[in-house]
Length: 422
Image (cartoon, one colour):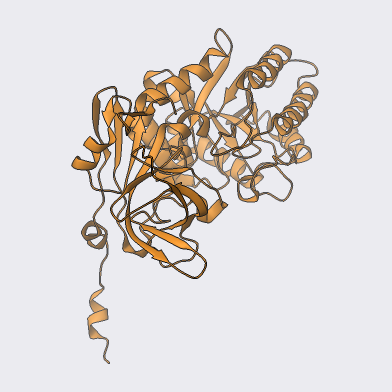
């Protein structure tokens, strides 16, 4: 997080003091460094210069339209999993021929829209989905580019809720089924099976699962390509992890070397779907201490951020480093930091050593640029918090706070409810 530095003992985001942002925007709020995103993208891209690698940002990581605009301006594509993400990417100016559509539950509406937009590739995850695509493409009189998503039965060695490549997971097709589909449908006039796809999980911090999965899919392609080159696109997914605390991380140079070797062997385009690695370190979550409370076993710091704003700790038992926005010389104390939500799961860290806190102190969570705002909710009828972006000396809102009044305005009371008697 090189764009988050202390100057005169106060946290700055690029060239903007966090104090200036707090004066203008009430906590809690997300804040992103555009320069960090640009730097991460360019750093990732440099390993694949002058190659046939297509970088398709995983929109689910953070779908904010401002972030997608940066992705677009730097020439990247997108990997989407819903019509909503597809609409966002097109609005941001990402080229349709750099968009891949994944996901196990695409509706007929979503598939029809994607087919009409002539995107690069739809990654098929079941035989039923394939049959629906054929039906829609026949109706539209279009020939659709498809990839078959393979489930390689490889354990990504990550959290169980974000592993996606084992035989117990809902994603993809086993190799035997994929081979049968290829043989039975390859000559269908409404589709063109030109790709294979894999994605084994998220927040992967060991390269070995990638190597095993890549080897499996490479051997399968060699089998299909026995007589001629059939597979033109190989989508190797994403999933590279970042360092939240003390985790080891994968060498991108080594990862790139493996991928470029595969590209050379198979003579096909390689699609990559980085998400977290491009935006994860670009964001912080700024929050205020509401109360301090001592129990028999804990010193609680109750803050104005809830699990509805940042669900990763509750959902994945993940821990984000938390610090005060001011550098101080006072001593540290062990705090359990919790939010206002009526769930015990609304706990961010337990008994962690932090500089002594007092009411109204402002703290910040590190590395929340991915799967932070994108997974937020209105649980407990709390508003969606704002998102702010900084670039050099410039800053502005990239998502307004959604008020509870606006939430209620979307709800209706049917007339017959008024007729209910006590």
